[in-house]
Length: 155
Image (cartoon, rainbow, N blue to C red; front, side, top):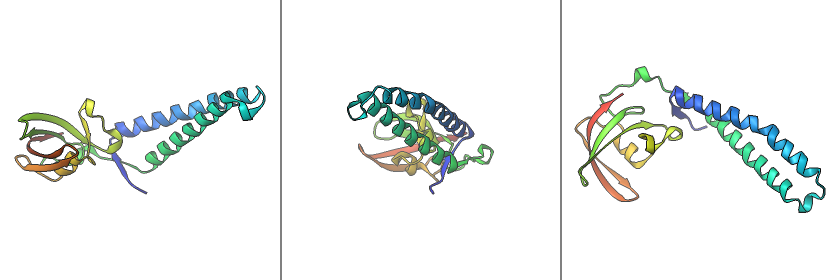
């Protein structure tokens, strides 16, 4: 089983998502029962749609249960700032474009680039791991090679 590292906040969000998904089960079951009551199931589009929704919901529930079971919460008090690691806020300078970016490195399930959370499994995240302030690192991204300087590491 693959371990998924995350914050306590990320784990709580997964648990809330699971509770919401489980709460949808009776609604979909009722929709299936209602569609079944309408007669011939072989030509009943409502029945097929409700069954498909049920399958997707059960898949989502299973995925969330697996993520929660394999989650390992990171103790944020044990995070240092001497080298880049999970949960560090990192300020980098893209040397080719002379632009500065700042983001927090998080587990894959918590990534949200629009809110400044970059997955540690991305090419940039992997390239930064273990490096110190002042290091110049290179990441191979889908857009090509990217050289960046680590300007700051914080919590």
